[in-house]
Structure formats: C-alpha cells, structure tokens
Image (tube, rainbow, N blue to C red; front, side, top):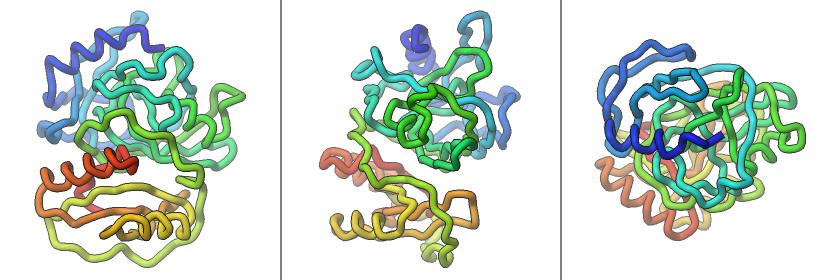
Length: 261
C-alpha cells in the first residue's frame, strides 16, 4: 500500500508547513492558518487514478473501513520521515496532517486505541485508515484483516519521533467511567502526553515511575474515556518539545505535545 511513499515524502518536503485550504470529503473543521512547526501537510497527489488533497485539520470524525499493514514495511521511512515500526501504535491516513493523533474505535467490538498518524495510505478503494500490526491486534481485527471503525482527531501535534517503541501491553483499552474535570492551568501552557490508558490504575502506575508526571482524567463523556499521563505545563512549545524528545530517548515515547489537556 505504500508504493508511492517516496513521491509523497518528496511532496511533503517541498511544501513543509504549507496549510492547504481545499474542501475535504471528511468530516470536521479546517484551519486555514499554517500548521505548527514540525507538522507536514503536503501537496495533492494521485495514486491509482485517484487524487488526494492533504490538509491541516483541527477536528475530524469519520466512519469507514480500516485495514492494517506491517510485513515488508518495518524499519522503512514513513511519509513524514519517521521509521515505521510494526510494533508501535501508529497509522496511515491519506489526507490528515503528519503527525497527528487519532482515536480509532472498532465499531464491531468496541475496542479503542489512540494512534499517531505518521504515514500515507490506504489506497485501496473504500478504505479509511491503515493501522500498524500492533494497532490491529489491540483493536481485535488482525486475523480478519479489516474492520468497520470510527476515526476521531484527538489533537494536532508537532515534532518528529525516531522509531517509536513497542506498545505497552496495558495501554489504551475500552473504559467507561466519567471522572471529575481536568486540572485548571494557566492560558498558553503546553504539555507532553506520555501515555493514555483506559484504566486509571495503569495511568497512575506510569506516573509514579516518571518524576514530575501527573494524571489527567478523561475529557467529557465520550465512548471511550482515556486517563492521560502528562508532564508540564511548559511555558513554550520549544520547552515541551525538548521534554518530549528526552522522554522518547528513555523509552517513553514517541509522546505528544499538546496545547491543552
């Protein structure tokens, strides 16, 4: 599915942080301002006779068919220059900005996972998203190969992570509790999310292992609330990105830079 990876990488390199304003066929709002530093969009490109129009999005919610990929691509560059890791929780999408974070819900069994989108695809007719082998296993459709899913943009992120590590076994599963509201922080603060868990106990166990880390309760009453482990707040985006990179080097990555909890 990644036969046009080099072409897409070249397009991304040329346009860098250009914010495209073309009308999308997916659900959600567009942001007509340039994307943050480190986020790539890319020029329109054509695969198998179909033209795709990448764009920077601030919201996105779509339902469709998911597939997974892994064999033959492990260790190779993704569309935004990261190294594909079949054992990491990542995904490919044909038009969303790279990288970004999406929540994928398997509508056939209720399983949920948060994924870092860092590649382009799928290009098979009728497919919405391509997930890594590890993500397919978490979502419960590795054997079937495809599943009906809902894809929701969680937070536009920035920065590049090198070779994301394998997922932790207890991370990101279905949950149902509706917790108290998140902590109040000063406007403009930036955070680094280290992990997201369906079970509060798993989130707090990770936070105890990371000096200065804390746990933010789920936001709203969504279908799959996640307890998020974070560090911060940081005064600037650069400070948060430096902290994210340091965490990634010690095996707590790739991490996400967030403008809000």
